[in-house]
Image 1 (cartoon, one colour):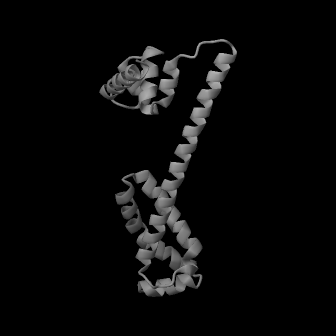
Image 2 (cartoon, rainbow, N blue to C red):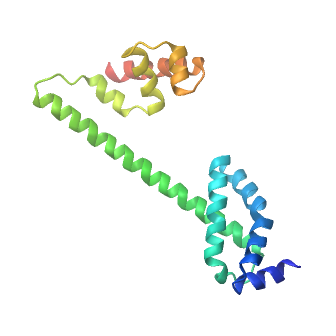
Image 3 (cartoon, rainbow, N blue to C red):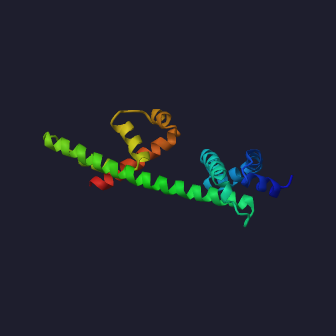
Length: 173
């Protein structure tokens, strides 16, 4: 059976035809998403989301473009929407972190405890720098242990601690 016949049947509600179409195009959509995301897990999730959206919206397919192009359009829009959500979530998390630091600082000051400037500087650092330097200099872990904890190479742990300390020295002088 030709793809157009499958499409005609699928748009009229034939679930078997729709299933056949999705099976035929799954790898195509996945490989496309893999190329644009460079992340196999994300590509797989987006491919599945694309197939779900196709199932929900198959009645809107109007055959003005190829079915594969329609699927690529859905996949691309889902990927862009996901990127926007991640950006908003990251911004929200950063705002939450700033509020948490302010709250910790207020609590320390209300109990007449010192609030070291180093904590403000640490709070401004990205996690990939902040966590290794805290593990090394507050908790005394070795670079090898830090690498194991963070699932990074020992040399990467050492480099991150070095760069974080350089940043701290620069900010605190």
